[in-house]
Image 1 (cartoon, rainbow, N blue to C red):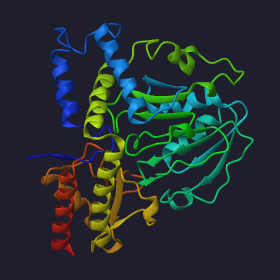
Image 2 (cartoon, helix red, strand yellow):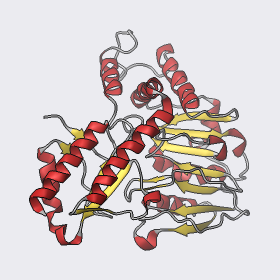
Image 3 (cartoon, one colour):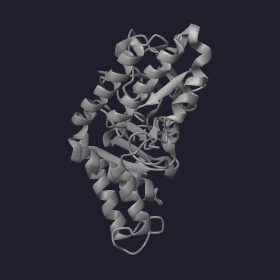
Image 4 (cartoon, helix red, strand yellow):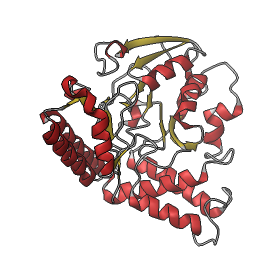
Length: 357
């Protein structure tokens, strides 16, 4: 039985990425060695790193003056690295979910934090809009997609100060005006590669403005100067990331990926909104994520949620259980999810509704 992978992360990868990675595990670049055992200093892996960084710049149309890094530690490490490197006195944060909230907590270790707005009052089911970014801060931080709650900022904000974005779960799902940002970071395990690597895009002139000493490994300049090779990088995830980036270029880049993602999300949200037993957790259509579609049973059908997930599992639908903070279901429809997988989920939702309404 074919499985349809809706896990939020680690998540679905393209067959192209999986097959090429599997081949490299057996024989990397015709070296007779596995990618699992090759030296990161070898010319073959250096070529992987160089091409991966170049493709990130090409796909996101990154202007001059930025460096692309592949590091370990996940996006969670960036919650501390960002303020370590940028926060001299005060920073502004937009609180739109668990990861944004955690970012605030880390930043408070380094200076004053102004939370300009929060959607916590409604369990993070909307994106705040009525707020002002102060001009006396070192930077403004946003989390563009909220995996747990299914909300997303899909337009690059205008900021009067430096801007930082956690794009872990929607990177490469749309064109981004990188020039508006000073740091963009993203854990690879949503839309890029297996867990273990983190993509960071850094405006070089944003660095060097704090007086505190920064530990070598936590200093972005260390990794910029050494082209992400200061220490042993996560070799396998970076190789897989390269395969995904090649695939993205082959299918037409982020503009084409956005077109596909919008179509998939529209189909699924339409089915949920039209359903007699399901409802979306995010009421404002403008705030709905096209990566993570969160939905629940209507109150009168609440007791059927587990039955639905059990039913879906028998049909090859995996990974749709919602986060405990929200409950219900969550369908993560990242770039690698084909429209056929979404249509299968919709078919099973309709069948379950017919049998239980």
